[in-house]
Length: 264
Ligand code: IPD
Ligand code: CA
Ligand code: CA
Image 1 (spheres, rainbow, N blue to C red):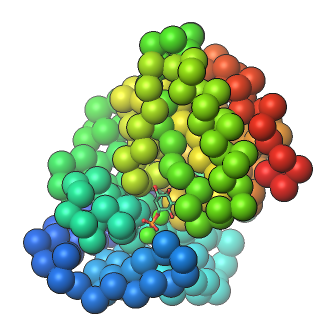
Image 2: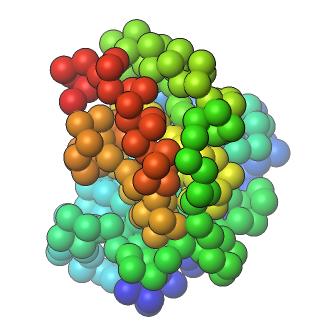
């Protein structure tokens, strides 16, 4: 898998350059609303094109699932691409966004790369090979209680039917933890969890490209991720709880009473 990780890194850095070059003009870019509260710019599309062309040049027979251009059919290797995670931040000049690239083979995420071009932070993971930040090993925290825990999350603005359930979870976690952060990039939230900057994370209604690379990072950093039924169906359900094994369990206990049947 190392050659594939190398290609993912090259593609993420190259997309990151495109994003960085355009960051200053971001407030003036044409913004398309793909759906309610769902935006894309020409930079999302340019960055995605760059990633796909680098991957295709190395692995023309591989499949692709990319946020902006959808599915490109091929063999059992599937590259899952979010060219710019945190587009709303990018548009507003709020400095928290990243490129996320994962490689799935026969249902398992093998490689994950998340690149923050503003801070030049490169998070990488290979299944069974640990998780790294700029080539140094990272680990989830070893915290075992909610009291001093910093928790990451995202608001379910694209699935407002789950807002009440989410707010009940939010209330329970607010009352128990040291604080909650909603920084606006699920990929970076998961990378930060892997790097020990957050102690746990949960979100409703994510897409595969928001979390595939991040969840591999968390697992390779010693963490655990499940859906809201304590199973590993998070990529399909879009609902995820993650943390070190103990924090994951504590989060699950707080979240579970508010999980509706539609969220299982
Ligand atoms: C979004 C970000 C955000 C999360 C949303 C995602 P995008 O991705 O990851 O943190 O809360 O659900 O859609 O649209 O900026 O690529
Ligand atoms: Ca995203
Ligand atoms: Ca995106």
